[in-house]
Image (cartoon, rainbow, N blue to C red):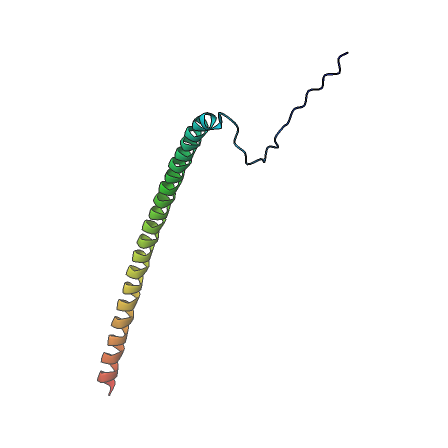
Length: 95
């Protein structure tokens, strides 16, 4: 067996040195990253639109419920006013 030793230096993965050809390897990564970012962004838009639709529907329901409550209160107020007017008329007759 020969006494030839091969020394090889391996840079750690966290090394800040750039490897030869890393710029050409990076372009597909960048475009993939941009595609992923674009798909995440479009997913966020879809989720936001769904949330806005849900909130809009909830708000519409609450507005309708509030209108019904206001209408009911108006009836109660009118009937109480009518009752008070009748009481005042009776008091005037009895005085």
